[in-house]
Length: 141
Image 1 (cartoon, helix red, strand yellow):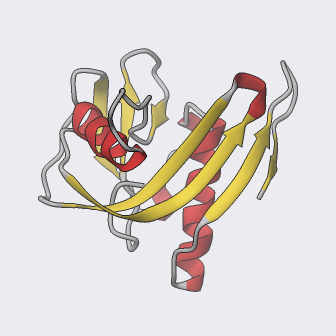
Image 2: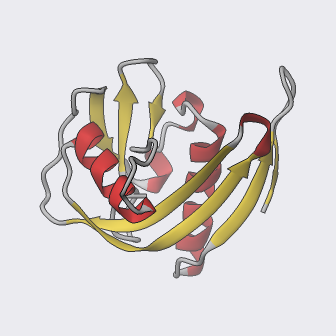
């Protein structure tokens, strides 16, 4: 999540798909997870962010992926689609387009964010997303 805890972060519509996601991607050699999150947010949303804290660590064993999601705030109130994105918008939690999110990890992340928002403070989450080919996704947090 790349925004202050009080609101949700920019959600981008990627060029690869017509679905939406939070800015995310692979780390490059020599960068930390936080540096990678900052770079990906710039590349996908033209947004400069200050990382506040880790928010979630989600493992997806079936596809060999780990997501490390950070809470961050925009340094400036400016953002726009980067070269990999078609659109970039901020959403209030009640307006998040859950039906058009690309990845189960982003669905889980945003739902955890909304739960934390309801209790008034963010906490760190660890979970395993158990995907089965062509079947339902189970999440253990």
